Length: 507
Image 1 (tube, rainbow, N blue to C red):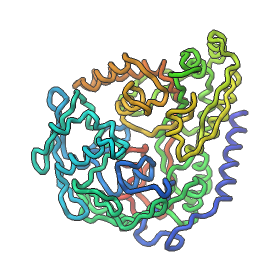
Image 2: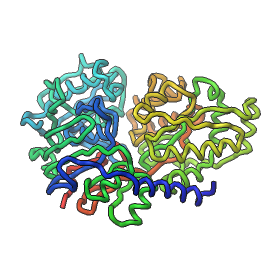
Image 3: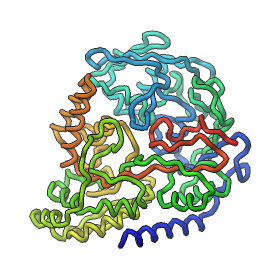
């Protein structure tokens, strides 16, 4: 398949899907009312809740950002910026962190206090909560941690961690009132307050006029459930919504060509990778991991699967982010090396399944092209499509290889969550290395930032060779908006400005 032909086929498929997709049905009639901003997201169905600590989908994070607030947020490069925390500082050992809160209130008028922060982090760390961010606070000694005053607290760690503030801005770390036991009508300190919510359906929030950063610009915010990308785009073009989340590069071309919507993009917002499980055959043989890496034509994957909108990957997470190693050469395909590695391992003709899903708009095209490319070097790769709803939990335990995507996160957090021996099932490839663990731990306990960066670079380059994480590219992150709104910027997922609606003008 040539690059040009491949791209034409993908664009034709997207155009057909958009033309055929039914328009979303929205309560209250078509079109957004005055002052109401309507945002279309895929949802999680009838089991959804507004508990900010248990949701894992992008819509969960976006609703939590509207209703609640975190101590810090992330800039585009994943460095931390203040939110509810006005200032913070560690002691010389990196085990005690003193945090000063800014003056902020919950939607019921109560002040956000140090006790609320301590309660929130205890709840996240408790096993019974099943919180998405529990690992970030597993090392906190809550018996020793304390409120120094209403507006100041001290968090005590069991081991040094000079990157600890990054945990306070991670997804699902929003601060809740200390007496919260129910989330059917949640009270937060975010720029919007609760009005109504139907699990699997719409959520309506209203502007909170006393927010510490000033009132939100829209009077109301509604999250509208639209599962399929083509339906989100149709809803946008028909005026039923103002914002369409997660738009593929192929759809961007069509929207820009039509000129009826605006597209906002973050160039390298999402890692695209093949995860090879190195804790089981066949990829427990490192020669086969190297063969896959050498057999990929990453330039063709970029041009066809990502429609040329992205960046070639170098088997490392975090291109463009703080602590990403600089100066790495772009990988080139070497089919002869790949064939020789297969022959040396006695694995010429090896067959294996590549798990994939509709959970990402780029997976289908990437899976087909990867199968073709690796077939040319002597591997028989069969894509196997899994259910989108359970895909990322399924690939943790099952199979030997899977496509994956990961949005932007601070690099030290990603390394700790996905590649250390203590990461559990979140270490999707089963990589284990005492040397890597030691480098990561030493980096966190190093106060000097330059030295910390050197240690993290060494850890990443070590994992690059053996971890089984084959990062072939970075896709742009795109959203589309109607002409009647302004103030949306292209921002990486998980950053402060991603899915941030309080600064959006509706007119």
